[in-house]
Image 1: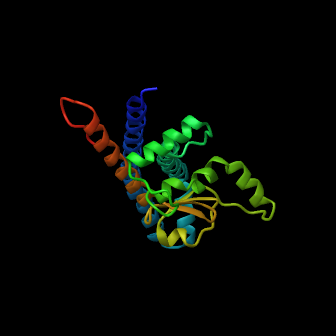
Image 2 (image 1 turned 135 degrees about the horizontal axis):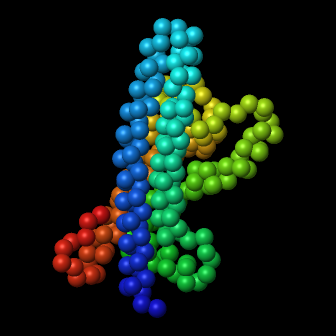
Image 3 (image 1 turned 45 degrees about the vertical axis):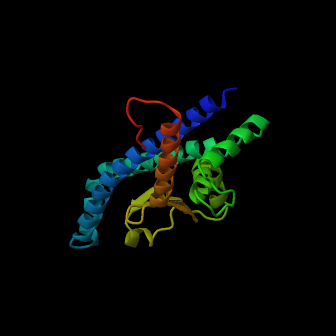
Length: 212
C-alpha cells in the first residue's frame, strides 16, 4: 500500500470535516441572533398572560428555529466524529492502528489524553446524542417529567434541566450532565486542518497552495 496516498486521503478528510464544521458554525452564529431576539420578545411582555399568548402565537416558528439549531449542532458534532475516527479508528485491525499512529505522528498529536486535541479524543457528547434512546429510557426510570431540545442563552439555560440543550451564549451543547464547548471543539478542528494542509502542501506539487 502506498503510504503517501493513504495519508493524503485522510489529511484531506480532516480538512474537509473542518470546513464542514466551520460552515455549520457560521450558520449557528446567525441562528443565535434569532434565539436572543425571541428571549428579548418574552422579556418585553407586560405580564405572564401576555407572554403566554405571545408564545402560542409564535410557537411553530420558535419550534422550527430550535430544530434548525439542533440540526446545525449535529452537523458540527458529526464532522468532529468523522475527524476523530480518522485519528482514533474504532476498527482494531493492525492496518487501522498503524494508520492512526502514523497520522497522529505527522500531525504532532500527543498520546496523553489531556494533550491536543483533547475534545476530539472524547466522544462523550457525541455518544450521548447517538444513544439518545438509551439516555431517555434510563432517565424516565427515575422521573415522570422530561424537558428536551432546549435552545437559549446563559441566564435562561441555567434555569432549565434539559435532556438536550444548546446554550447560544456560551456555545455549549449538553446532554443532561455531559457537555462540550463547541467553540473549543471548532478551534481544535481548525488547528488540525491547518496541520493537515501544511503536510499536504509539503508533499504535493500544486499550481496554488492549499488553504486550511
